[in-house]
Every structure is written in C-alpha cells, then in structure tokens.
Image (cartoon, rainbow, N blue to C red; front, side, top):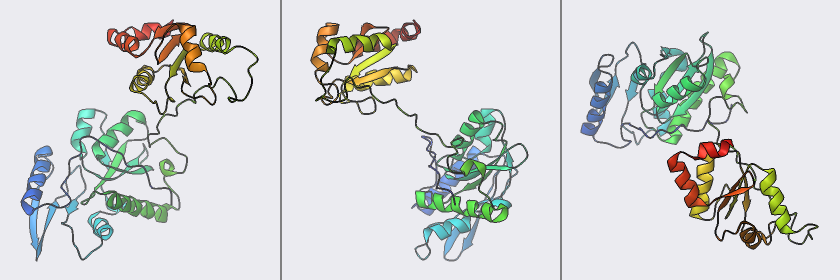
Length: 316
C-alpha cells in the first residue's frame, strides 16, 4: 500500500457542515441543486428515526449518499458505506475548457480517480475541492487526465477522506495486483512538491579557521563571481527580519536565481556584518548586489518592483 497522499487544499471549500440541523443540510443541498440544475435532483426519503438525503445519479456525476453522523457507528465505516466502489463509479470525461470542467465536477471534498487516454487508471487522490484538483491536473498533465471518477465524502475530515482513498486504492490493487503509477513511491507528477531552496553561502569553514585573504577580498570575489547576491538577516528559508523576508520573497517571486548569505551567522560568517558595511558604504541590511554592484535594500527593490524595473535589471 503506497503512502497516504497529501490533501489538496482549495480556498473555495464548500460542503455540508459535519454537524448541522436538518434545515441547514437542506439549504446546502439546495445550493448544490442551483449549482448543477440540469443534471441533479433531490429526493428525500425517511428512514425511521433518521432521514437520508440522496442526490440521484445524473449523466455526469455518480450518485452520492449523505448521511448524518451516527454515534453508534464508527465514522470511517459510515464513509465507506456512503461511497460507491471504484468499479461501480461512473467515468466522466474531462472537458478541455476550464469553465465546462468546473461545471461538470463538484467543488466538494472527496476522493477521485484519474484515467488516461486508454481509460487506464493513472492516479487516485483526495481533495478538499475535487473540481479544483481536476482542473490543476488537466493543466499540468493533460495527456494523463482524460476522464475522472468522483466520490464525494459526506463527513470530510482528514480521517474520513483517507479512509475513502484507502477503500478505492485497495479495490484497485486487489483487482490488478499493482498500484496506480501516479501513486507509486517517488512519483511527483500528481502531487505538488514545495520547491527546494538553495543553501545559503558561507564565507569560511568556521570561526576558528584563520583566513589567508582579507574578508573584504572574499566579499569582493563573492559579489563579482555571482550574478545576484542577497546579504540578509537569517537564512533564505527562515529570514530573521521582515525586510529580509520581503527581499527573499521579491527575488523568488521574480524567479531570480540568487545566492544568499546570513550576516548574523557568526560561526561561518564571522565579521561579515561590519566588514560589508564598509565595503558597500551602506549601513543597513538586507543588501542586494547584481553583477557586482550594490542595488540597495528592501525599499529600493520594492520600489523597482512596483515600477516594473526588476525584469530589466536581472536581464543585464
């Protein structure tokens, strides 16, 4: 069994609250009916003593059963019983137009299975917004995201979503004897990975190592041998002041390949802070150098960004 996938998040989360009154549930389902009026209908039946609400099967979406929480049953068992099996769920074609895609797939939490051009299963995932996840996959790997099966989870906490994902995954493995290629360990096609940040440069091997050249000469070499260098307080992954954090954000936002150095690191950059002030004749930090020349600090970079001048600067 592969590792549980990361949960795709979306700011446009819309779902039936976990604990809600019958009236609130009806309001939420009414919203769903307004969202897809041509393909859904609401049928209400009574099951003494608790009601069951069902969205009937449409041409585009599988049937979805929403049940109120039952204190007598485990939550994960309730979720599994509410989902169709993977093999019984309708396969829905993914349209190329974004507007049609968001109309066809629900913006609800649940589990989804993505199929390629030959209806071969590529990936099973969980999401806080199925529509947003399918749209993202369609844009990033259109040749692998041709059709999708959808299962909306009625109690969308992480435990319930994970259990739904395991249910579909185990069914597929039992039927085929293998994991979907997108869920194999090490496959990063379907799950967004945070970009790796470059390590900060160090001027010396350690504070107790005697330098053979003056520190100012090391600084001069550093700024002239690298196109863009940012001297900041803290590391690029954890800046220790707001100005340094903003400069790192600006450079990363512009897609600049830059080197960084922590002026507060007295273990590996001992004496850098005061020496750099003399070298640049600039008393504050951060300091950004481009092609060996001091551009300035946070205020200057922010002003250049607002004027649209940074792109030209970094192309020199």
